[in-house]
Length: 553
Image (cartoon, rainbow, N blue to C red; front, side):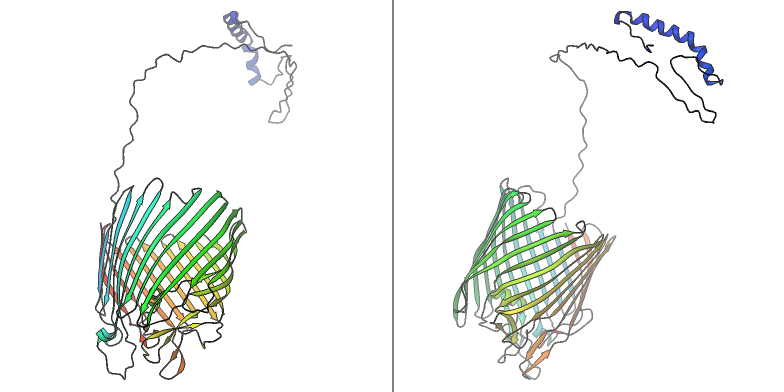
């Protein structure tokens, strides 16, 4: 039996009329199925009713024709060249007004020890072609821990920087001038008190840098080139000039395969009361970087060429460079291994920034890290909590230490460990960040196995740094705690080794912002009022407090 009938296209009306009439005739027979418990009379289907409440209906198809149905398609030709006109206006997006950009600020404050402070920064705003900035800073503590002005110090700094952007790269430059003032106040209290001008030390530093970077770092061939000049001089006869350049190039073979080359050349001329000397240093490195799935690898070599003060020192060195990192536990733990070495540059401006109380005619030697291996890990303990730790063991030559001069105990000379010295280091860094709260704890432990020196003079063996910050609405609070211990010095007065007391320096700063432009601040340093000695005979200031305001525009 055929369930459905097909009708010719020219008899469409007749088919519809026949279907309608059939429906009217059969309608009374179908209605009782829904109202009475009787069996259907259709021969086309067999319906079985179960006695349970829910009817289980099984439908059997009596006739399933396999007749092929031919589909005929009719195509309508459309003339796309017809002119279509639309009469409506395009949507307009309302342009939001740009928020005011604050690129400049001025900050000033005063505190105890006749402390005055001022800082300012001025910068251009919203430019796609260039950016210019001027930075100024002034600090002057007119009194110190010992004999008022005899232990005063001050600093003035001026820096001008600029950037120029183009389609091919970025051109940068910087010019800076800095003046620092210190006093040799580590004299013995039994001596007559000298005048402040007789123990004053001044440092002048000038720097100039220019550089060019092509395109973006992600481009196939990326390179960065720069030239620099430094001038340094003290109040007496010491002068130092350095000219040099830096170059780095990266070739991106693909996202996971890169080649790096870096070079740094330095030529310095130093002069003092005993004469002058020229020191040259060239550092280069070439390494291949691979980043594949959970593996990150850098492998290559470093080389150094120099002519330093010591004539018997070798002129050329070759060092390994290896860094291997592997991710474990679904990238929650990174384990890394590092092996490297290199020549570390030492110049007068770097040495006085670490210890400004050096004697005249200080000898200089570059530090040679023959090799050092490190093993460590990085892990994410929880959301916002990270921990990184590493342990290293290496060999150094010409490590420098500070020791008081027997002729002028208030001044220091640099003493070198000429033998190759094993150094063990452990570093741990723990950080946490939750919303407006952040904290970071760093710990560094070091051990020196010296051969010719008695101790690592004035080098702390333990360093701890804790930084905590929290902001809420218009308030911002920052606390920094520094802890140093294990510092040993040689007391030239008693000719004995002396252990300096551990240093714990607590600093705090509170900011309150009245508006986007105005804010006030209060800060304190050495809040435990500990009169410690970072360098023998030099007492630090007790608690220092300061208050001020800042304007952003």
